[in-house]
Amino acid sequence: MTKAESADSSWSDFVQRHMDDRGMSTSDLTEKTGFDRSRLTAWRKGERPTLDTARVVAKAFDMSPLEVMVAAKLLTAEEAGLRGVSTPDPGALTDHQLLAELGRRLKRTAES
Image (cartoon, rainbow, N blue to C red; front, side, top):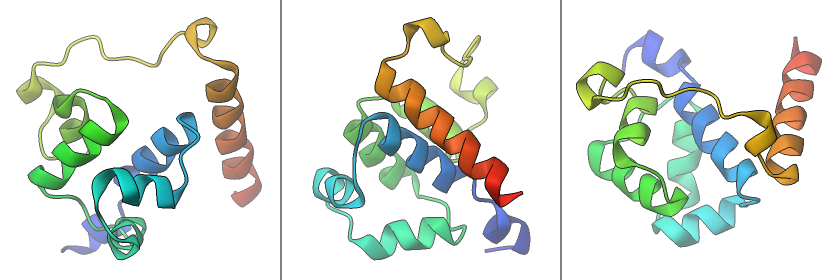
């Protein structure tokens, strides 16, 4: 793993954001995926998933495997054929999803 990869937390942020959006704990995710906690810790340290791991995460989050593979930087959006993937309309989000996003932003601001 290169220094750039180890410093890249976008995968970990992606996983955490989707856990928060679904009200999932680490235990919930490990139960749904069959991964142990050390895998999640490795992601937080910058390790990226394999193709098979990304597929399992996609299933756990009930998402398109292509979208997850793009988030994991295993594919580019162009390679995946994803066009127009954007942030959802806030009006379409649940209260829980909105609160999770607000919490993430406040945490990010507090850490700066």
